[in-house]
Every structure is written in C-alpha cells, then in structure tokens.
Image 1 (cartoon, rainbow, N blue to C red):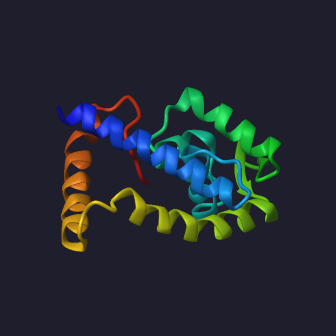
Image 2: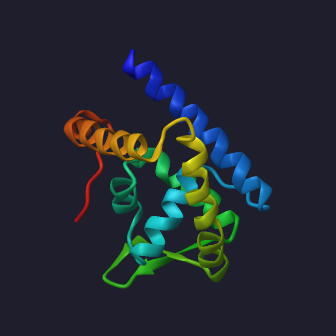
Image 3: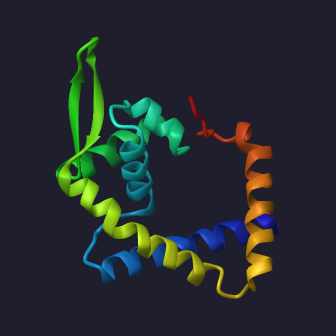
Length: 146
C-alpha cells in the first residue's frame, strides 16, 4: 500500500537525518531544520506563516519554535505594527547551524534514495511532487506560500 511505503520511507528519512546531523554534533529534528531554513529564507515571519510554509500543524509549531529558542537558534521579536504578534529571526548561531547542516542534508538525500539510479531518483522526486501537490488540500496542515 502506498501509504505504508510513504510512512516507512519517512521513518528512514527521519532516522538518517538524526544520525547524520548528530555525527556533525547537532541535535535537531527534520522539522526543526525545516523551520530554521524557512525562517532564514523569510526573516520576520510569524509562527502561523511559518507553519504554512513548512506544512506543519499551527498548534504544534509553537513547541518547535520554543525548542529552537531554547537552543539559541531563533529569537522572537515583537512586531512593531502589532504588539501581540512575534516575528521570528535566526540568531547568528542559527544561521551558522543552517549553513553547516545544509551539505549534510544534501548528502543524506543520496543515502535515502541510494537504491535508485540517477534517472529513477529524478523520476521518483517528480512523481512525489505531483502526488503531494495533488493531495495538498486534503492535509490538516496544507503547504501554503504567500
């Protein structure tokens, strides 16, 4: 069944991510890395926008940001236009972490799809994108971009 295979590949991807980043001395989850990358790409976004950029549940994203803040990778600043809102920014340590981990993440992709030849990898990724785009609106946390 496709759902089972997708879940199983996700288990492998998470395991590889944790193992490979730990070898470099980092304690991050794939979701934390995705959040760091999104914040780095769009400094000043809020948690709701972050959750839509990485397709993560809005209720749970607060805990992700809390952990990143505890690790001193992210800082929250009050939005000058709306004092109730908090904007997210990478700290210098957070920026360094994203830059250091990025090559590890790219190398990990080859490990994850190691059983496929280059043409199969390309086709597999294209088909995954197509399936994800077609079912995005069915998700409890759809991917949204501004």
